[in-house]
Image 1 (cartoon, helix red, strand yellow):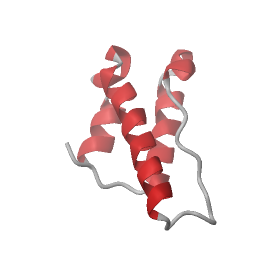
Image 2: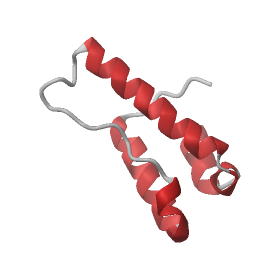
Image 3: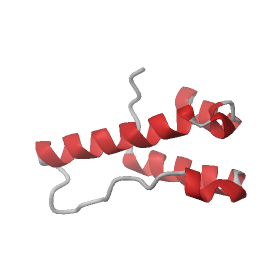
Length: 77
């Protein structure tokens, strides 16, 4: 699956997950770090892409989150 989202959309998605599942904060991984200086460098972008992929894989593999409307909204809207 190929997803094109801005970092801010991932940030909002993570915030919504934590808000919707208050007892599961520890199961929601952190997003990769932001950087003003390196944000257009290919190495930084690849590292960020891999970090966002890891984040999304963790969410999708967690049975608590995998069927949630929050995830479906993020993936398909």
